[in-house]
Amino acid sequence: MDLLPGTEQGHRSEVAYYYHVFGLSVLSNLAIPGLAPTALIAAKSDVQIFLGSLPPERKAGVDDVETLEYSSAYLTESGRPSLRIFKSSGSTLSHLVFEEGIEFWMDGPSENIWAVWPETFTLIDVSTYLLGPVFGLVLRRRCITCLHASAIALQGKAILFAGDAGAGKSTTAAAMARRGHPLIADDIVAISERPGSFCATPAYPYLSLWPASVEALFGDADKLPMFSPGFEKRRFSVDGGAHQFQKAAVPIGTIFILAERTPGPDVPRVESVSMKDALLALLANSYAGRALGREEKAHEFELFGRMLARVPVKRLWPDCDSSKLDELCELIEGSCQGS
Image 1 (cartoon, rainbow, N blue to C red):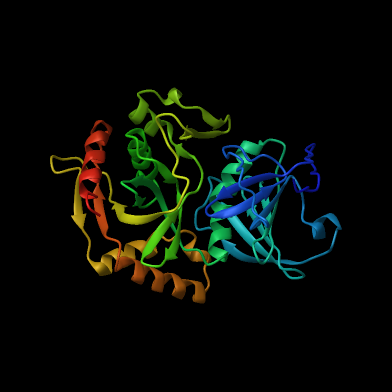
Image 2 (spheres, helix red, strand yellow):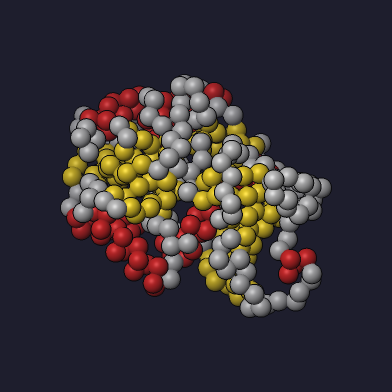
């Protein structure tokens, strides 16, 4: 196996761990919680990860000036941006600083990632950032279009659930997974264009659910384990048994835009969406869209336009009543018949 350098913070690894995530071959110096190493080892990895280690320039103490490149619109309770990205003036490095204290560095081609974190955090905590916003940025910098969505496989097609934060993307995907439909991705869906189709690429085999969602799905929030003591969300693993993970990319069949949960006798329901509204919805749910440059935004706009010629987009109105989750799933299954 390939060898990777040892790490600081009391960790050291003499073997490499290989993974396949978001369609990329990944090599890490430490085992990444929540991921299963792959037996299919690529001749050359797309991304190398050095957990608990600084970039060589930082190790060497190179005096460099960083300029702010991006600041998240989402603010923490302290009123500070949850994420800031700095650009190094003396190299191609991007420095990602999360308000909680976890830091990542990424080189220009997005082929190498380094990470350090305070002792109050665990590797499990760090992996949630790595597999979320960090890999989201890696994908976007590689010109891979992504939607802020969750996805499952139904009858050989990918069914995507997009929407605002708190709309119920993960909850809906989890409810479908409980009915035997394999999970493809949670929170970030990477899209690949192939001759005659647009495919959703598998991410990782678990969903992150708030306790209220776990209670709605399983009857008790404690039915699923917490990621770590400091992280409120629970992990719903789909690593075999009754719950499956889709390991190969599949064509996208339908994209549902989740509307606001509404009470009433006419929900849940599905509505058709005009081409214009569908395009606006996809652009609004583009993952890390604010971090894209002009050329990347133009590429994304054109791809969504081509995709809408082949993939139907529908608006899904869930009910406030969590007891109607099975009814919602039946509606989704019926709406996707023949898609």
